[in-house]
Amino acid sequence: MKALHSLRAIVSGLVLAAFVAAAVAVGLWMQSTQNWKSHLAEAQLAGTTLYYAMQNGTAPPEGVRVTPLSAVDQTHAEAGAFHQISGAPNGARITNVPILADALNRITSKPLTLAILSPDLTYRLAGLPHRDGQTAAETTGAVLRLLASYCSDPVVVAQMGQAPWVRIDGAPVWGCDAAPVDLRLPAVLFAIVAFGILITIALNQSSDFARFAAQLRDRRRVGGPASYDLPGPQELQDIVAAVNSYLEAERAQLANRAAVLSGVSHDLGTPATRLRLRTALIGDADLRGKLDADIDSMTGMIESVLTYTRAEMNVEEPRKLSLNALIDAVVTDYQDMGRAVSFRAAQDVVMQGGGSVFMSRQGQSVMAGDRQITVTGRPIALQRAMANLIDNALKYGRRATVSLEADAGSATIIVEDEGSDSSAKDIEALLAPFQRGENTATIDGYGLGLTIVATIAHLHGGTLSFEDTAVGVSARLLIKRG
Image (cartoon, rainbow, N blue to C red):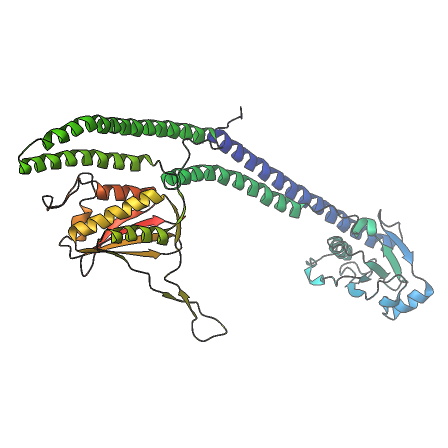
């Protein structure tokens, strides 16, 4: 049996995971920042110590090596041709850094000249810190801190006062290999990925409910299953179980209703037959006709109620069909019986296209009126709905005209009557079961025809509506195409 988790537990887990992910990302960011601060501070301290070592002739700081230039390189350095020094990078970018002697101690302090040869960049000296009373040693420390903040592996030559030029090798202090691993970008990426995963999980929980709601909403239209078994949190499973119980009870109720009505219809068949036989023995033709009409009305009403119940039970499986062919078949049947029913072909529709940068006017396209309109529906139910609408149009008018409209999402079957004295508002009032018009004395029926049509429209995700026209009333049966 698969394990189920409640929505409360999932939300709590997501919140905890979000805090953990945020803590990890912040920890990586702060640790990386601290490592870089320590690295730059060590480089600055090494620069300060280096200045005093070169000034006093003492040993340089750890990780820094000072070696005199060769005679040839001395000549190049004195001439300022630093790019010709041995070991200089090809196409080196040269940054000259003159560091003045201390203003308050010019006897022991000496000026320091640095030439930095980088294969990648020219260092921005404008960003170096400067304050009143800043010593040359502090400035040298700031320069080495600037070198350590970039991964460039430059060649550095220096001259203390009028002393010979020397080469300063300090890769262990400011080189690329000495720099700590920068985890700030990975921390940001980790946070983005972690929160993306958490948001996806949260949205998936919501999508489970939305998917079930969509399936339940379209259940009758597309022929949904007898019961549902969807993955998701415990709360969704409880809802699904409750819906399954409700659907089972509803099916049982409709089945019992249909069984009762079917039984009543069957049981009434025998006495109705006896009544017909007995009425046939009645000599009064007028009385015999009235009794036969009452018997027909009784059996017809039972059959009408059975038809309505079967429509509610949604017993027919939906399939893909052509509305054009279905309407043509229904209309042809009426025409074969000599009824005034016709099928009006749809007109070609001219559609305006969008503007174009290559043309000053909009393009046009033509949608053919005789195109085939396919839908996913129940052919017998739709045929019954059209027959009811046509019968209704013939009862209240002289003739019926059927047409078809469609767009990408829906199709509309239109049945127009001609010569009807009723209005659309009057007919809409007849949608409730057993509602009949004012002319019930002259019109056959039991008040369930439009109710059955409305039920069939609902089964197909659509609606039944009515509109007044210049010659009568048009009924519009809209159904979804999907």
